[in-house]
Image 1 (cartoon, helix red, strand yellow):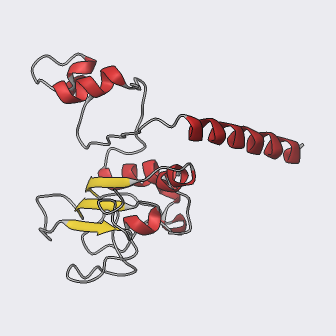
Image 2 (cartoon, rainbow, N blue to C red):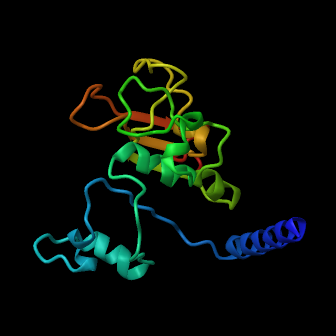
Length: 185
């Protein structure tokens, strides 16, 4: 029975991947800290104008029932990226709070990520903004190579800050695969 279910799921995946390859939409996933449901015009906000996000919502798809696994940035980013509860991260020790600036990469590079899934479907992938999931195998050297990091988790391009803007190191990271997305045309 399990074999039959796996076969049916594989068939469904192959069929949906073939369909996606024929008509793949652009995907922009916005993951923002401290943004409430009523903070955008497309969801009813009147005190703050958000015309560009409102236009994205009007021309694209809106999701109106979403839940975060954590009220803190690092665990919720981990869950979105991996599809796994953060309590199961770090080989069962869990990811409970914001990653310190000295954190190595908190996501196992052997784990399938949302970026990997998009790459397997033919998409180019990029991440922008606050990473807050650590870099490297031990405390990162901000003047050296930042591996493993976003590129080893399926992203072609990353530009952003390693942690919050109000905490050192005050650096921006620009990482990309070769050739860079800019050079690919």
